Image (cartoon, rainbow, N blue to C red):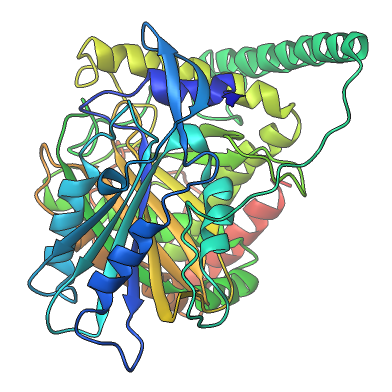
Length: 495
């Protein structure tokens, strides 16, 4: 049986290379049951390999012609020796060493002649936890799709039965046979409207280039080159961290901000501090690539339904609270633009700008061209309650994503059981470790929390500089409270 692939899905195959594989992954930390034997993980490995009748799409490989993907086709047999691997390390709880091991696994491209997924079980001889590194090609689905599949393989109660992710049966919704004439007319009308909305987006971007309309989405390829951006090559750095998601939501309520906006602020401050360690200074804001979920409520189809657009972060404010207000205003400019265009228009816009970025990568020009953005930050809602793999408790699940053309650092978080599990990845061309960056994120979030009640709190120098501007005769020194009052008033005037 064959399954069609959407054009957006196909782009993840077309743009893949040995230097820049297009799989997404997660690192799961799992606690063995109290009565586990010394061979628990080994037994789990052999049991998992017995589930060799994979369900769609885990039993499908890509059929292509001249590197262009045509369809997903069911294979006759799933090679479990390839898809399920077992590894032994000195100490699973040594997080930094585990990150280095995962980085080596993450840089390897999946075999394109097989179904595009692998599960790696990782254990040691002394700890009561083990890890699973799972990677799946992005052609199979976006974050929402993969999390839904993930939840199907992890139970809400301990069980003696193992139901692996690839083995879970997924029912396909029966759809009524469409009227071909109506489908053609509806499709043509939708295409006309999508192209119209796309032209409006491009015209408004052009108006921003001409400085006619400054209050719109960032202009692509105007980001700042840093040690994190440039040509994507083989080799990865990986790190992980945790943030109490209940604290994030509580802070959002106090600051009248979304969880995404709170996290964007903490990540922005952390990345600035990290880059300053490499001697970099900035005269303008950094940009983040922000994935936008284009699914309608209740849409449980597979594949990818996302757009990725740049969002301007903060600049020239050392008060964490005021940086957050800048980011809120910039974030909502993009959200407003997305709300007033059809989802297809933003998908095509993503494909358009990413196609240019891909050409720069193919011709090895990414080191010479300004990036679309410096960071890619995405938030994937996960299970709200504790989950179990058979009778082993899942402690954390850290998403580790792919790299966009032009590089940068990819930060993905998944909320699980009241905690935001954050996965961080970048190329290791100019960066040896991301461990300091994870620490900076944690410190930045705590600082942002305190800044709500302490207007005098300021970030240490994070490498931002502005050209000297003549001081107005009405300018005078303001207290921290007055700064906050003006920020609230300015933000209110943007709505």
